[in-house]
Image 1 (tube, rainbow, N blue to C red):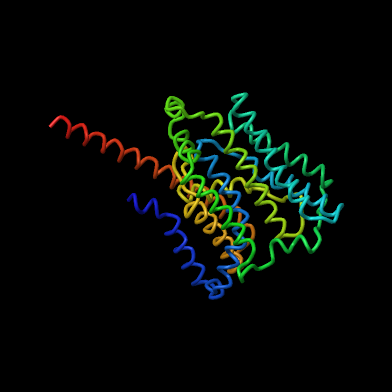
Image 2: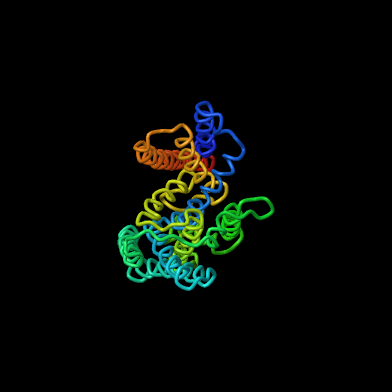
Length: 324
């Protein structure tokens, strides 16, 4: 049972591919799977940042709004100054700034992450709508090259995703910060007694989440070429679903960026791609999205319950062994 729960994303992915492949032969084409990877890259990058937050037993509902406000800023700067790199720098700093604001409110004022990031979601969207004047904004063609070029024959978004995932996985696996993050997520008080500073760790994960949201926003903007008032909408829920489907616990302390979160994001994009391939009713998309989130939460809840039961059995066996 444990193996089934841990392999749930892969099992669901195979099932989804089988169902849509039977409905549409074009779905199984190699080009379509590359297209799925390209389309999943922005969500996966945002989900990487969300994984850090969930590992700390927190949540960040502001990532979609951060994507929107950062894209609005970079869109204005790119069109106004006809230069791409300063605009990208400002966009990244905007994401880090919003992440730092979340971190300050959560760690210094000790406010609840759900409330802080929900408020930041409305603040971010309000600022972005003010910057864009609620109008769609088209970017020049040279900006689109960030999302359409190929390097060594591989689409640029896949390289972006590989770089972010590699860096994140390296931080979680090989650095003291990664080990401290898992410790804080499992038991913050125990981590504090062991010499870890939970507030610093928690502050860092919200800055990382803001940075990843900005990078995901850059990539999504380069693929779409247009900023609309709905840019980044519901990305926070898709990021949470991707991370949880990939094995990251909503209760903190357990999860991986690779293959977990990446697999979750690809699974979600595969479902969306399959719905388009079979010409499904667009009104079904929200229902499918909500079903994905429900499955993600159900899998996480079931997995946590089983792990708790196995842990109790293991402790009981050790105690019985000690008595005998």
